[in-house]
Each structure stands twice: as structure tokens, then as C-alpha cells.
Amino acid sequence: RARIDQMSLAMTPIEGAHARATLDPDQIAQLEALGYITSDGGEEDGPVPFRENLPDPATRRLLLEDVDEARQALQKGELDRALALVDGLSSRHPELPSPKQLKASVLIRKGDFDGALAVLADMDAQRPSSDTKAMMGLAHMNKHDADGAQYLFRAAVEMDPYLARAWVPLLHSYLVE
Image (tube, rainbow, N blue to C red; front, top):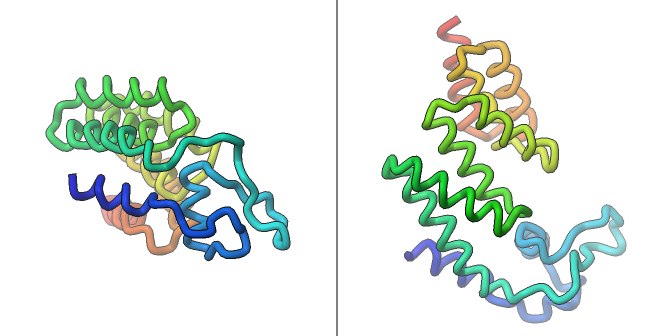
């Protein structure tokens, strides 16, 4: 509950957010993560609105609570319940990566590595990230595909040299060879 309150506080409207020049890089990243703005690559133009008439970020609190509930079910080992929750979230909010990443985690825990890889490959095709590549590496590792796992862990580390969740299994994979 405290974590949700912190996230809600972080989504408090920024004074003068309508003036793009007043946003610092952290604020821009937060608004991009919420889907409220997008950078078009033009340095002088800065971020541009993603869509018109978006809801107030504070209304996302219920969504965050649903994501947290699914995460808690996963942590408690209630895998079928977690899978049902993330499937519901994904159908209601297909644009969000969090439910998809949670679904991949649930599928890995259930031993459905090919299912997890399908979800992660779709995520990676839409928006490559070091976390997605590390999770794909974990799925390959569980399939006993050391070469595939090492390739993906190295790709994750190239994207984010400080990503421990990629370094640790990468180093481990070399030790067990």
C-alpha cells in the first residue's frame, strides 16, 4: 500500500508541465513512461504530447493497484491467479509493458519457457530493453540453452552495463560450462 501511495505521489501534476521548456530530463522520462508525451528525436522541439485528452495520471492508481495485486500473487506462488490477473490487465491495457513482463515471469515460474519467450519476444520487438533481454536469457537458461542464454545476457549487459540481473546469470553460465 505504501508503494502505491509513493507512486501516486510521484504522479502529482507538475507545476507548469504544459511548458515543455520547464521540464527536466527526469520529468520528461516520467511523462514518457506514462505515455503522456513522446520525444520525436528533434532536440530543439523536445517532447511532444502523445495524444490529446489523456486522463489525469492520478486515475492510474487503480491500474497500479491491479499490477501490484498480480505481483503479490506471483510472489505468493499463486501462479494461476497471477496469470488470470495479468491476462485481464493486458486485455484492458494492451499498451502497458508491466502486465506482459509479469506474465512472462509467471510463465517462467510455471515452466512454460516457450510461452514466456513468445511474450518477451513480442515486447522486445515493440521496445527493446535490457530487462526484457535478461528475462529472455533466463528462459533460455531454464531450457538448458546456454548459448542462447549467454547471447541474451550479453545483449542485456551491452544495453545496461550495471544490470545485475544479467551479469550474475551470465557469469554463472560461464562457470558451469
